[in-house]
Length: 139
Image (cartoon, rainbow, N blue to C red; front, side):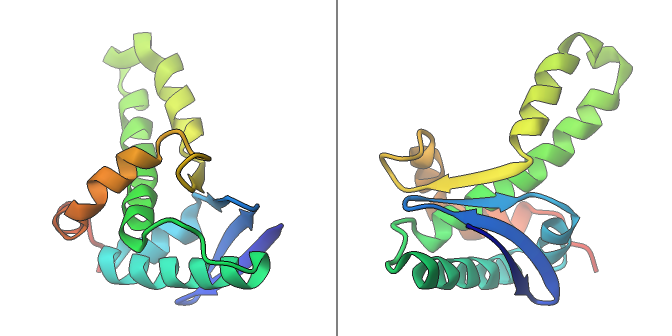
């Protein structure tokens, strides 16, 4: 089910199935998160989870902190890889960087048992506020 969710004036593209949420990692999402990463991401996660519950009829079993850290991981990894890929000395790893960058275009957040890397984001979720302090902020 494809949806557009308006959050803090940004149009966020996403889709749902029974155990997953797919979020499009685009300029709208990056712009939403950029000014105040922790607060805006918390607002986004709440909106996504409310939309999921309305569409699927139950809460998704992913913690808010785990979902937030996963969103940041995808947004900022894509930016880093885009920069690395543009440097001539990394020409040998262009293919790998491009593959990883493409993987970041859709943020695929699934419940345990339906997402092979959920444990990574769950493990990092206890460091959410610390991670947020290191994220770049645009004024």
